Length: 237
Image 1: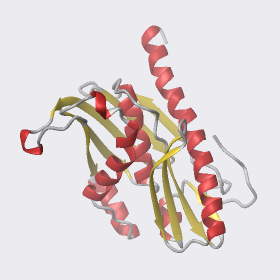
Image 2: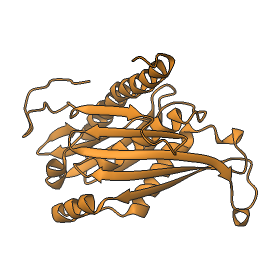
Image 3: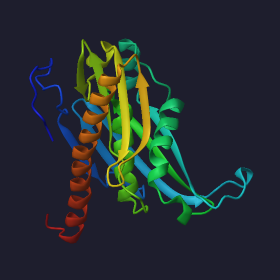
Image 4: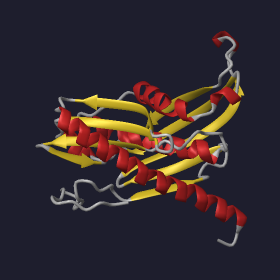
């Protein structure tokens, strides 16, 4: 899942390299589906619960909903505040919902709500795209019918260079950032967030890098899901 390029970063990675990625499913016994994901020092856990019936006050709808909740541990919140990169729980939850809902076949679940509960155990940079990625894996682990998985990646723009999967320190020094969530099979972008000023050529290069990285990340997500199924079929593993 790594692409070496000229120019190394503080942690030794090339510009287009992910940090070490670890994905494990079925980590919360009380959840219908769950995932634990690490990208370097960034660590998140997500559980999926439901479906439950939608509240009456929301009225009837012929489509289901995805309800997201995000919490940061006190350690993560302190680390983000110290770096000046705070993000509210509600804004992260809203961004997750926007990225995930297009991937869920909600028309098959009228009046139903899937609750996605996410926790940032350790904030180490690129927290939001990692939350989205983990939540998509957890939805698939729960057996929710999806159009496709939703890998999400972030890029940081610094001194004319694009850095994939920026660490917390790198994000603190960036001139701009790009976050992309993608369903690779239909090649449909489910969310796009751009910060800072980007020239047209930079945006083209950034999108090309981000979309390619999402494809690589989806392969790792699929591997984790398949490993869980194989382990279930062969308890000796």
